[in-house]
Length: 391
Image (cartoon, rainbow, N blue to C red):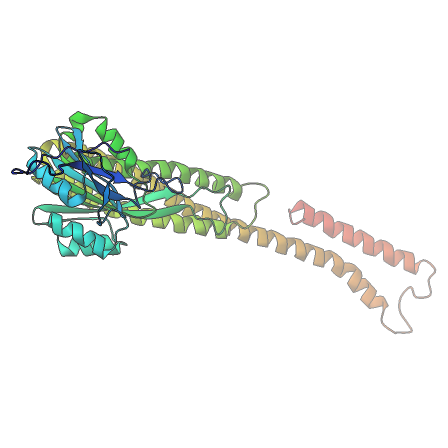
């Protein structure tokens, strides 16, 4: 259960009036094992001193995964988004961290109005399907990240889905960070818990959240790259095995999945480079060093993907070459067999002609001699073809 938030009462409260002391999330519990802790589908409720039954409050809670206020590296309040921003600005050094899952235009529009988000960035966050990029709108940074999830499968086939992509959109301000998830993007509950367990890092403000998210996304890339490498190794073993079959469709499918992987990874290099090199007041010199480390990890992923791509291209070429060689071998065997069969066909053709005067027709040993010559010539051809590797 999310802890109750403490909010100072408004001045001038009349005696006997019910004082609101915080907000409490009442949700429907986890669903389908979702990593976000089942916070979607609930509502924020006003809590009173007299512990009266909570009053339902209509808001954007159905898309809010988590919303909290942090100060000095600690979580101090759990409030609805608009109230969280007001509470964060009331506290020196405080900031609000809001997590959203697939909000529509109406839900995100309410939060955009409260946080002053640019309409173009909000439109991108609602529609999704964006390339990784970094944009600045006034005092807000807007970062789009592509996430990659490895799709488990027992064996790579011509229709196997290897990777699945999702999207994370991050709005970063001086006193807030809003994260929007789309598609198969993994939940960030683990990132939030890890940061809450490191107050000294969380005390650096919203930029620490941005770094933790980017670092987690790139670490996931490395894990998926390890899993994809196993598929590449398996395919390589199959292509060069003695029981090799036509693996062109499997190779092409893996090549397509690698291209999807590259489309998520390669465009991220530029945003991370900007975060690590540009003197942005929202990032700061100290955190820029951390983003350089993330950029280095991304470079490792890009190099590995480039290697996988070259290896898969080589496997496709090797597979086609093996098929061509096998076809040549088959054609030589067929040609050798046809040559051997041509000998008895030719001799039988001669003696099958309806002429009265032909050699050895009246000879008692003519038929055995014809069979012997046929067998001898056929055996000789077979030996020659075996010697040259045609059979």
